[in-house]
Image 1 (cartoon, rainbow, N blue to C red):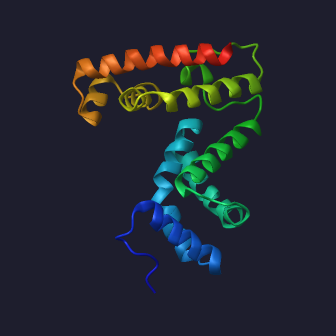
Image 2: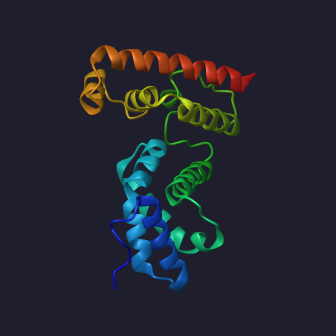
Image 3: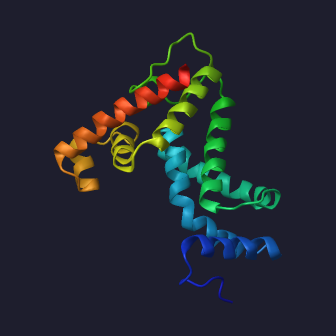
Length: 190
């Protein structure tokens, strides 16, 4: 049985696979749908956990949760929905370990904001959430270079190789992105 038409646009293909799963608990359709987006889930988890093995485990745990969660939601865009589910999974895991945060929040946000020791976990989480929203608002070239440089910790040369931008462009996008993030975070704090 053919599960979907490979000539369909990605969002339509996702919708067909999702419908096939919902219609008859077709695990093969769910598996194909999830495997298309598993790499994104892994990188979301890696961003939060900073550990490859823990992130790989999380990818499997999130898949297991989808089996029931999908049926309880009205999903318009599977990739966006899955991103939110993945992010929430990571945040819930980190919350469950309250005083033992496994990543250094100060390192994660060493650019435009500073966390303070006396801030509560929820205050830090709120700042991280604001930071993610501000990153999403950046122009694409700034967002890509800031993500590669600060979050994925690539050096300038690696960012140049990955993006194809010149060294001057990369430095400019990062500098402008950092400034725009600071301005956005300042507005969020006001």
